[in-house]
Image (tube, rainbow, N blue to C red; front, side):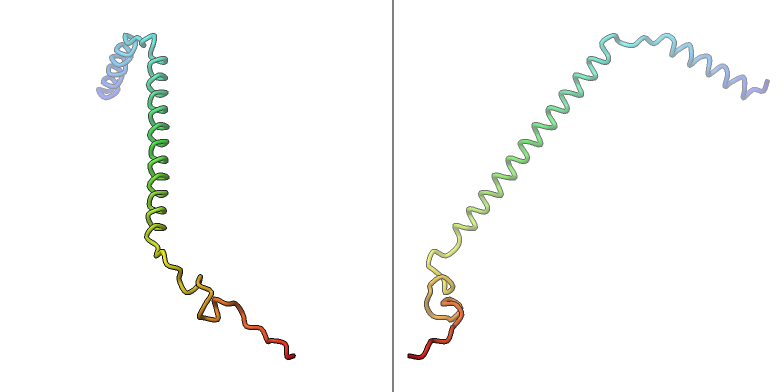
Length: 95
């Protein structure tokens, strides 16, 4: 047996002895699951708040833009002036 093989075997034995002395916490699964559920709830709450904020900002910006439009009727909506406002011109019947 070479020195490398002996060192590897001794290291494996030492790690096995160390691992054999470690006992799991009886509530480890319950604790980990509770932490995961809390993080999941927090993630969903943050996402809900973020969606509400973005929706509110988009609504407010849209209302502000609509409020900035001129209040006087434009040429398109006046019904006077240009032929485009009165529709296509049709030939009139001759009496």
